[in-house]
Length: 265
Ligand SMILES: Nc1ncnc2c1ncn2[C@@H]1O[C@H](COP(=O)(O)OP(=O)(O)OP(=O)(O)O)[C@@H](O)[C@H]1O
Ligand SMILES: [Mg+2]
Image (spheres, rainbow, N blue to C red):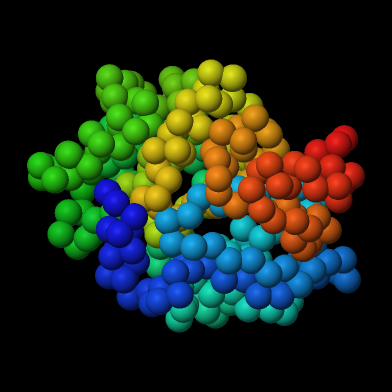
């Protein structure tokens, strides 16, 4: 799928992205008993962009994802999905339904089901039309599952029980399940935590294949991984709840403030 098709799908979902941004955060503050986990955070993501977010522990990265997905309400500030959807007025369910998909660190796959069944269960379908797991799939649906199986490097393992997969494979399966729902924006919080070096490298390849097809926000501490996927794209450095620096990986890596609070340690 091309970047343009990605735009078209956004348009089809009723999102007006005339300005090319899929997500806008403006001056978001989140206070926990007076402590500002986010402090006037402003950031936006373009359609089809792969944005890396880095920063020290406690910088507010996960809290930002909680705000985007409706898990945490901002104390002040505005959050928009496309031009028209005010995330602060939507429930977690409505936000997920509108097309923001999130992968948590602990996989939420169905261990007693096969890899194939997990993807099938995650498929975006009209539940009124096809209510059961074992109803027959049409060729388009099979094709979709086959495409995702290849992408997540689990083709050949579709009949395996998900519970028997390696840690890395479980993470990929969960990414595959997210993709089955065709989200407009994908949020990944530390996707390579706990992975072997080989698994980390393959996850970077996977994300590079998704580049341009989906809008993706990735939070990671693994700098080798971030360098692999950032390429010439924008890397945002969060610190104490706001943006400390933003630019290419090379730019933020040579930024004195970034070195002082994060990379130099
Ligand atoms: N529900 C909460 N109640 C109180 N404080 C919280 C809550 N959630 C997060 N915090 C605090 O907000 C700050 C930001 O936390 P957050 O989890 O967003 O950081 P992070 O950038 O994701 O860090 P890490 O890299 O360690 O995952 C931390 O100081 C954390 O202790
Ligand atoms: Mg976090």
